[in-house]
Image (cartoon, rainbow over all chains, first blue to last red):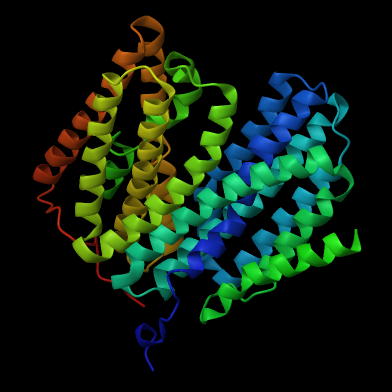
Length: 209
Length: 191
């Protein structure tokens, strides 16, 4: 069987794959930025943390050759999303005060770098595993997933930071690990099971709390 | 040609980044603006998925050009619209949806064009270039806003879109490139 005939990734899978990869944009840009100002961190310092996050995505072209040259795109996605998850959880656990700004800047950069690697891997998966006729549709779902991630990640995290500061890191962690629990190569329709997993974990935590 | 496409300000949605600066002129309250952000995400998602659907039917290039011109029309209409919150929110929601749609169509064009050899590197490099299409028009439009006013800024956004489309046509003519629908790509896919 040729490589071409084995392409079977459904375009809708890219909604969820990019949802995971774009998550830190909203969390750092909106939620953390807003919360830091409230905690007395200056606008300049907050802007530096957000800029570090943006820089990681701008440098995406530096990480991309690694994704093409070694390992598989699936492993890069899992590795990138795992690094993003760990750094984002650490970032949300760090005390939100001016003294922690250098550490938060480093964690924001590391988290977004992981997300950028995952995003590069997703584009690679799209190029290889989606039939040409469905690439445009996959691009639409990819863009939509990123938009939702920014809105949901930002607004949701801000809400949790405001109402339930102690549990935000756990929720963020569970969201990402839930996304990682599925096989990201999207060679089957199993990727569509992700939202139900996320919902299930959140419900379990809500009941436990 | 694809690199040119990524840096021109056609369909870039620059104005969306300046919404906070001009909302007050349309008497939009902070609460309305906050609510708009949530609904704006929904229209963006709908716009992106609709653009993907449309691209599969008429082609990514035609979708991109169509949505880009609709954005230009929306900005011209916005510049001359009554200064009320309802007009602001309706036009901005439309603009958000069109912007997301244009991005989706542009990504579709890029992904079709790059083929499979070193696909992740080519896609990431071209997508990094797309940041320029937002950066310099934002700086220019911000300066126009401060010196001339909001109406001029919105018309500048529209004019940049027209100029960007002109640049695209010139590049296509110089490079003997045909703005056709799906399947137009730089090189055949290799496995």
